[in-house]
Amino acid sequence: MHRLPTAPLRPLTALVTTALLASACATVQTTDSGAIGLERKQYFAEGAREAVRDAAEAYYDEHLEAALAEGALNADPAQVDRVVAIANRLIPHVAGFRPDALDWAWEVNVVSVDEVNATCMAGGKIFVYTGLLDTWQPTDDELAAVIGHEIAHALRDHSAEKYSTRNRNSAIASGLGAILSVGLAVTTGVNLSNTIDGVSQISAEAFANLPNSRELELESDRIGLELMARAGYDPQAAVSLWTKVAEQARAAGKEGDGRFWSTHPSDASRVEDLSRAQPLVRPLYEQARAAAAGAGAAR
Ligand SMILES: [Zn+2]
View 1: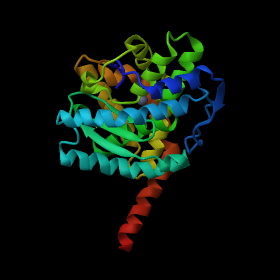
View 2 (view 1 turned 180 degrees about the vertical axis):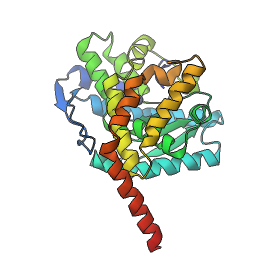
View 3 (view 1 turned 120 degrees about the horizontal axis):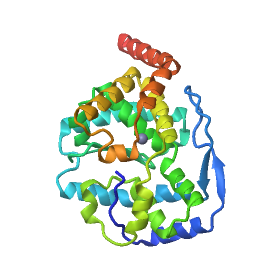
View 4 (view 1 turned 90 degrees about the vertical axis):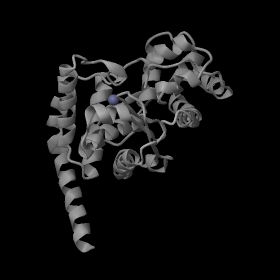
């Protein structure tokens, strides 16, 4: 989702850039701690979170239209139903971390493209690619782990945080290019890149190919783990998923290959941490299962 095409110049981005160039910075806690005990403070350039959100919304329709034109948008009803059902079980539980996210205009899409990827844009626009479903063959619980992880990136405004950190630590050549790329970084890109043309490719790539740090990845893993547990998906499936995926990649001699891996660095610490966090979320899973069983019995 992050190897990006060039981007069109738009009035929106000009406004956004002005806001950012005039920016101060702020340390923010985007979410509550949850059962997983998340305490990390986040740094954002002033206006960055809003800018990323606006840019994501501005590009969303464009990407949907492009996928539709290619016959790739939500083409398989069975796959769409499955992904939507899992996402819809997860989404209500964002309230435990970030109540305002309940009001996001959540949308869930499956794009038919042979690429292992999934994303959740700022503001709650979820994409899952059929390449991920075909290659990883996830169970429902494992797919919940993937989607929960991506939702976590959005809840924590990680795109805006990466932008802010980058902007603070080094001179980005162009503020405009950077913010354009922020917008694109949280959209899907994929094979839709040929629909976008314009300026700032260098800046866009400079930002968009920034990987999530291990810290952001582990944090998203943990939030995703709690979301899935609260939704009644077995949190142990997060461990089985990443173990399976790592084995698959090793067997194929492609460890670390592909766009998903370019932005989701993986190593043994991921599986270790997900295993370590199980006791924190297991009770939530058991409660969710009991509640579901109770509701079933009461019917
Ligand atoms: Zn990630």
